[in-house]
Length: 153
Image (tube, rainbow, N blue to C red; front, side):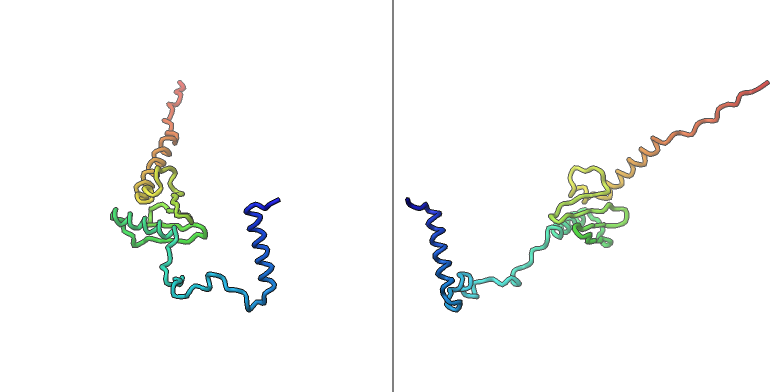
């Protein structure tokens, strides 16, 4: 019975490996990658290093903030192990950038788009704080008026 194509190829590979084991180590042919001249290969140091996705996102945010006229003098970027934490200035919410470049704002409860919320961070954060303050004053019980004391005659 004949062999199929995969079986023939497997048998040929087995023959080649046994033939290479018999040859002395000095006579073994070099792999194809080593036979190519070194001039055609591009050294790794010559290629510009690709910035990480986190750094690309930080640069996009910086561009957006400068377009809006935000002062970036007090901008701080902290490395929190997995995340980069960006704080623009006092009063701004913390912008958390994940390893894949995703943005989240842990101090802001709801936003449609994280990038837009990060760009308008101060306005969104102040609006949220104003809603919380309004809600806190609305739910606080009003002081009771002094009840008139019963007059005894």
